[in-house]
Image 1: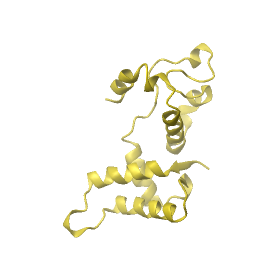
Image 2: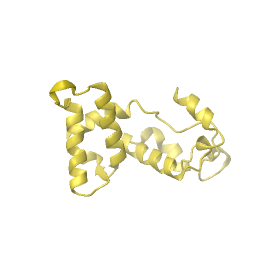
Image 3: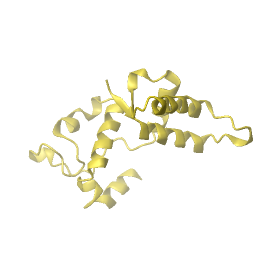
Image 4: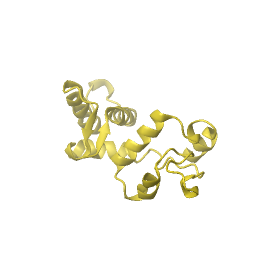
Length: 137
């Protein structure tokens, strides 16, 4: 089971709210509504993660459209795993995560992004933050 964190659902909702504002009739666009229903259920059940496979198809498609606008990899081209480290000093991923990145699902990649962002110890977040910003642009 790979989980999608509620903060990713919120980000996807905000993406769709900007992309398709509700206007004067206060009707949510279909992607926003699909994600909002998932978000509401998560809040009601006091869960901060939703199983990737259990999302309704419309909600997953809306989340995936948002996901496709995010950077694919946290790599900043300073990889210490190639030097034998278990954890990359540049991006914060484990050796296995670096090796398996192309086979990971979007939700698995977002879990990794969340962990390394919360950890905030990789060089991409401090010593080479400018380089990471350039990689996003």
